[in-house]
Length: 358
Image 1 (cartoon, rainbow, N blue to C red):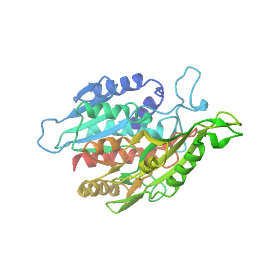
Image 2 (spheres, rainbow, N blue to C red):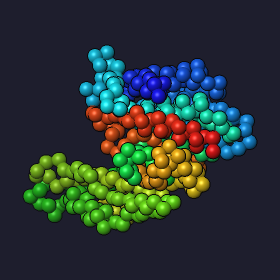
Image 3 (cartoon, rainbow, N blue to C red):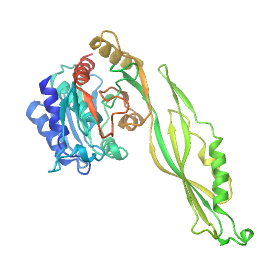
Image 4 (cartoon, rainbow, N blue to C red):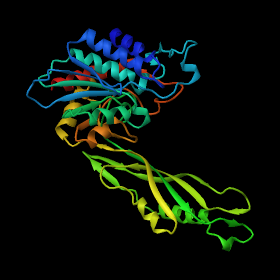
């Protein structure tokens, strides 16, 4: 276990919220020193490696990311290095849960597994800003048959239990813009009030049905919510523009009909970000992963779904069969008190090895 915790601490201590280069350097050098894999670093900064590439069997890749969100002041030392420490069976620090702990577990499993198939490892950049690294890798030909993504799946069926996520929601962020004609507020009929048109669009959005989907026994329910509204320039001017921000949590399959707001005069709709959902399309793969989890937990562990997007969505969208399995628990990522269980890290490492060898 000390090798796993030591490697996690090493990776976590390296700042990677503005520039992932040093963290990528550490991962690349570890792979070159500890394995005989074919290791590459692409122009985006993604680190990838393959073992047993010539094997005539479907390929499997362990997938993570080494960028993090900006740390809290309490998570950095004077020199800029991230603070990481052990306490009460947990490692604390920015990136312990999301997701350098899982990256460390995957590195060790990648080295130790004895697969009869091509086995890959990838740690991407830019996951926290929309999957930039994953998209770059996919466009460059990264296409394993199967991927096990190490984002958090612990504590969904029960506290402290490592589960297997067979699906997750996506996120589509969009802006509804209402255009009008300005006029003096003392003569409102002389203009077209953009705020009123925006309110009409909000009424349409409020009444939209958000789709749901069933994936291997897990039900995902989408949602649509107006989260911001901005319009007007002065108290005595009829506004000629108003913008409405919409947050939509998407599920595999249908999307809410947000384009219907454009039936209102002067209203347009534009998508700002679209992070795809993920749905595992191979029940045997899910069963194998759950069996590996239960072998490490005296029968505990379930199929679950996650409420937020990961790089598994980009991979699944490109045709890769994905699962999510990792040590982070709900509510740990992106917090000032971020931490990860050392015991669950060890379980993840062993599960990854079992999946690679099945």
